[in-house]
Image (cartoon, rainbow, N blue to C red; front, side):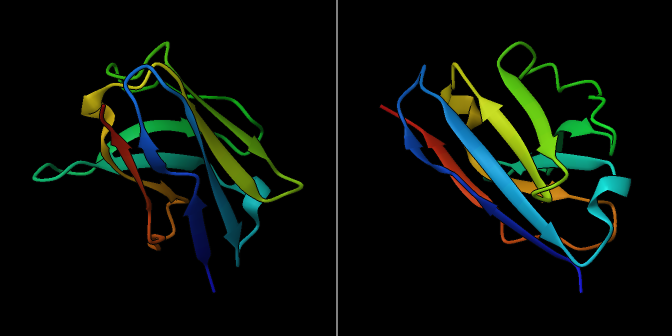
Length: 113
Protein backbone atom coordinates (compact mmCIF):
# COMPACT_ATOMS: atom_id res chain seq x y z
CA UNK A 1 0.00 0.00 0.00
CA UNK A 2 1.34 3.37 -1.01
CA UNK A 3 1.89 5.74 1.89
CA UNK A 4 3.27 9.27 1.91
CA UNK A 5 3.84 10.95 5.24
CA UNK A 6 4.75 14.63 5.19
CA UNK A 7 6.22 16.51 8.15
CA UNK A 8 8.20 19.60 9.03
CA UNK A 9 5.59 22.28 8.63
CA UNK A 10 4.78 24.90 11.19
CA UNK A 11 4.47 28.59 11.93
CA UNK A 12 7.39 30.73 10.81
CA UNK A 13 7.99 34.44 10.48
CA UNK A 14 8.49 36.06 7.06
CA UNK A 15 12.07 35.56 5.95
CA UNK A 16 12.40 32.35 7.90
CA UNK A 17 13.13 28.82 6.77
CA UNK A 18 11.60 25.37 7.05
CA UNK A 19 12.56 21.97 5.73
CA UNK A 20 9.74 19.63 4.82
CA UNK A 21 10.16 15.88 4.65
CA UNK A 22 8.08 13.17 3.02
CA UNK A 23 8.68 9.53 3.83
CA UNK A 24 7.35 7.11 1.24
CA UNK A 25 6.51 3.42 1.39
CA UNK A 26 4.70 0.80 -0.65
CA UNK A 27 6.46 1.34 -3.97
CA UNK A 28 9.95 1.38 -5.45
CA UNK A 29 10.80 4.88 -4.34
CA UNK A 30 13.99 5.30 -6.36
CA UNK A 31 12.14 4.61 -9.59
CA UNK A 32 9.66 7.45 -9.26
CA UNK A 33 9.76 11.16 -9.84
CA UNK A 34 8.60 12.86 -6.67
CA UNK A 35 6.73 16.14 -6.58
CA UNK A 36 5.85 18.72 -3.98
CA UNK A 37 2.51 20.44 -4.36
CA UNK A 38 0.85 23.06 -2.22
CA UNK A 39 -2.70 24.26 -1.74
CA UNK A 40 -3.52 27.59 -0.21
CA UNK A 41 -6.99 28.36 1.18
CA UNK A 42 -9.44 28.97 -1.64
CA UNK A 43 -6.92 28.12 -4.33
CA UNK A 44 -6.19 25.12 -6.51
CA UNK A 45 -3.37 22.76 -5.73
CA UNK A 46 -0.21 23.84 -7.54
CA UNK A 47 3.02 22.08 -8.41
CA UNK A 48 5.98 23.53 -6.54
CA UNK A 49 8.88 21.36 -7.71
CA UNK A 50 9.79 17.87 -8.82
CA UNK A 51 12.81 15.60 -8.75
CA UNK A 52 13.47 12.46 -10.78
CA UNK A 53 14.40 9.14 -9.27
CA UNK A 54 18.03 9.77 -10.14
CA UNK A 55 17.97 13.16 -8.48
CA UNK A 56 17.61 15.51 -11.41
CA UNK A 57 15.40 18.44 -10.53
CA UNK A 58 12.80 19.97 -12.77
CA UNK A 59 11.54 23.48 -13.09
CA UNK A 60 10.38 25.13 -9.94
CA UNK A 61 7.25 27.22 -9.83
CA UNK A 62 8.17 30.81 -10.65
CA UNK A 63 6.94 31.94 -7.26
CA UNK A 64 9.53 29.82 -5.41
CA UNK A 65 12.55 29.92 -7.74
CA UNK A 66 15.73 30.79 -5.92
CA UNK A 67 14.13 30.21 -2.52
CA UNK A 68 13.08 26.54 -2.46
CA UNK A 69 15.20 23.46 -3.12
CA UNK A 70 13.94 19.93 -3.62
CA UNK A 71 16.16 16.95 -2.85
CA UNK A 72 15.84 13.27 -2.07
CA UNK A 73 17.55 10.44 -0.24
CA UNK A 74 16.63 7.16 -1.89
CA UNK A 75 18.19 5.10 0.89
CA UNK A 76 15.82 6.78 3.36
CA UNK A 77 12.90 6.81 0.91
CA UNK A 78 12.51 10.48 1.68
CA UNK A 79 12.04 13.62 -0.38
CA UNK A 80 12.75 17.05 1.08
CA UNK A 81 11.77 20.61 0.37
CA UNK A 82 14.06 23.25 1.80
CA UNK A 83 12.21 26.55 1.95
CA UNK A 84 14.10 29.77 2.58
CA UNK A 85 13.10 33.42 2.60
CA UNK A 86 9.53 32.44 3.27
CA UNK A 87 6.73 34.84 2.44
CA UNK A 88 3.15 35.12 3.62
CA UNK A 89 2.01 33.88 0.21
CA UNK A 90 3.82 30.58 0.83
CA UNK A 91 1.20 29.75 3.45
CA UNK A 92 -0.44 26.51 2.36
CA UNK A 93 -0.73 22.82 3.00
CA UNK A 94 2.20 21.08 1.33
CA UNK A 95 1.89 17.60 -0.15
CA UNK A 96 4.30 15.21 -1.75
CA UNK A 97 3.15 13.02 -4.63
CA UNK A 98 4.55 10.10 -6.55
CA UNK A 99 2.06 10.06 -9.39
CA UNK A 100 0.41 6.86 -8.19
CA UNK A 101 -2.92 8.37 -7.23
CA UNK A 102 -2.24 8.49 -3.50
CA UNK A 103 -1.84 11.62 -1.42
CA UNK A 104 -0.65 12.02 2.13
CA UNK A 105 -2.27 14.20 4.76
CA UNK A 106 0.01 17.10 3.96
CA UNK A 107 1.83 19.43 6.32
CA UNK A 108 0.66 22.93 7.12
CA UNK A 109 3.04 25.82 6.55
CA UNK A 110 1.99 29.19 7.94
CA UNK A 111 4.14 32.26 7.34
CA UNK A 112 3.08 35.10 9.57
CA UNK A 113 4.48 37.67 11.91
